[in-house]
Image 1 (cartoon, rainbow, N blue to C red):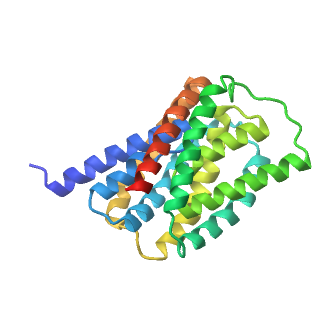
Image 2: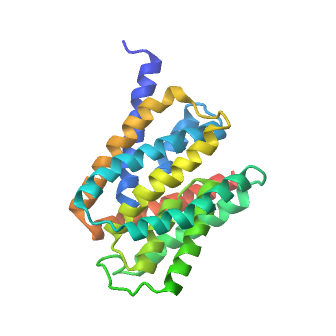
Image 3: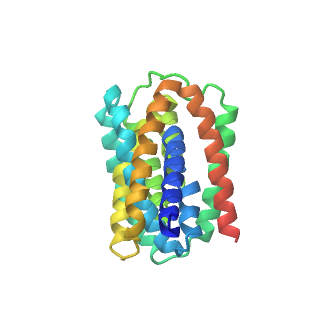
Length: 257
């Protein structure tokens, strides 16, 4: 007979795989399943968040393999996501340490719901790549938006990958499939890596859960990314709309409880 601890680890690994598989399809939302699961296992919110953040980096690593094999990414977009977003992540993490986040969670919940409805209304959004001239004004606007989303990532650590996905689709004319690839690699690994490091320095990570979470994240990220490449942007768009709707509702419930 398996001990309760082993059963818990297996169950957590399955939930990690499922949440990260869905996240790799939509470009965000792993915390929708994984974070509540850690809370269910008795972790206080600060420890659950820090532990989840470490596992999110593994999602980016797993998902990067199929997308890098496809060799369709351009370094200029990746650099812009990093240069613009990382200062926002650092500022957001600092702000989170001194200010309550209930108001911001409520606002982010409504904005995430808006993303879902906006994508549903825009039938052709991200269905094909558009040729858009990348001028200085577009770069400035794109960078400003990524900085703000990075701030929300550091401050709240929930659902912000969905915003990066939709933002770079609108600003740079990418397909859903390609935008998700950028989000998973550059947000999943680098933004979340910085967040995990800052939270880890506080000593809040529950290391006993990390091995199974990383295993589930890498496998879920890899197979989710592989499946997204096969199915294409139309399928990803539907998943994005479902996940963003669910994340928005989840954030609002969390804010008002």
